[in-house]
Length: 376
Ligand SMILES: NC(=O)C1=CN([C@@H]2O[C@H](COP(=O)(O)OP(=O)(O)OC[C@H]3O[C@@H](n4cnc5c(N)ncnc54)[C@H](O)[C@@H]3O)[C@@H](O)[C@H]2O)C=CC1
Ligand SMILES: O=C(O)C(=O)[C@H](O)COP(=O)(O)O
Image (cartoon, rainbow, N blue to C red; front, side):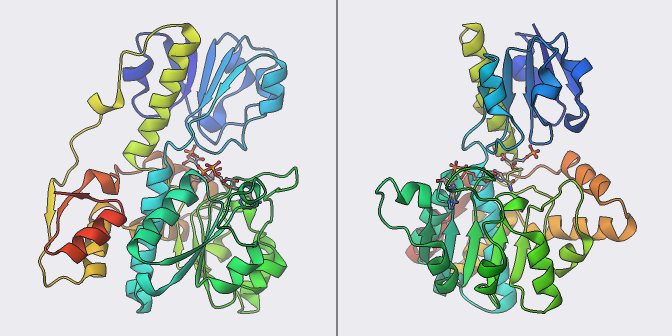
């Protein structure tokens, strides 16, 4: 068995080594000649998997270690009987950690309490659902928009414009789709952006969900929302003018916790074993290293939100990623190269749940638990 593997998938040797010969390639450079004699292909979001790539190959198994599947022509794979698997939810906690860490930073910088804000969540699936749960348990008022769920009769959802009007902070967590009743391409366009003036807009879904040109026009008119963007239209190229305007701009790394990326590999390994009709022998639990900080012990002098912020930023501070991106873009005009290099050399980052926190009082304990930390 021969597997072509994106070199940015962690633990592939440990998971797949006994079952196949592995050929590692940069994901954006995988070509038809590379996959011609392969049995399987393991990718991330940067490989377009379609007829052009696979028509002359004998690949019978394609796996993406990502939640998003907008880089995969699933319909074509289906017609060819090629087994396709994605990794639903693999890095959802990582994205939620990213959002929570970002909002706690924002609250400090802009002088508000996160708990006092109304948060709109657009797209209430694995990511949006977990984000909404954490924030509402923390005490925020959370407004939800998800028409595909609402139309099935599920309760608790509002119309998009209602959410944009009523929320102080809007977080986008839909997939990118361009067909069908609920297509999300440019879901946030001129009219929606007009409702967001003076508010905060965080996008950690896909860049194309926001009409970037409309956003840039709004920036010129000084009516744009404050932006926290992890994803951009046209990646890997980045619009430097837009990035300069962002409060936080990160190179599509919201899902890049070690746990999140590795869970993707583990999910593909389990699907590959099933495809081969063998029992999985390796688990992620035995591969993950011990987290670098064992225990955070908080003092009672630390206020509840400050306690959460300290715990969050001990695990992850989004400003580090934003600073690295801005700095690299200042010294390098080729934004695609900067984007790719930062993602390829991403430092190890652990999820909130990996940190044990000793709270000083019950208020701290319940807020920390709500936001995803493990209480000691
Ligand atoms: N920035 C990053 O690093 C990451 C980004 N993502 C992106 O986040 C997206 C969401 O991930 P999950 O929550 O795991 O996916 P999911 O499939 O569990 O949830 C997506 C939700 O969006 C809803 N939705 C679809 N069309 C909509 C519309 N027009 N308006 C409002 N809601 C709509 C769906 O009904 C669903 O509930 C992924 O598709 C991916 O593109 C995912 C992981 C990491
Ligand atoms: O899972 C997803 O969907 C994501 O957006 C991934 O975090 C993106 O990672 P790459 O595949 O682009 O490395």
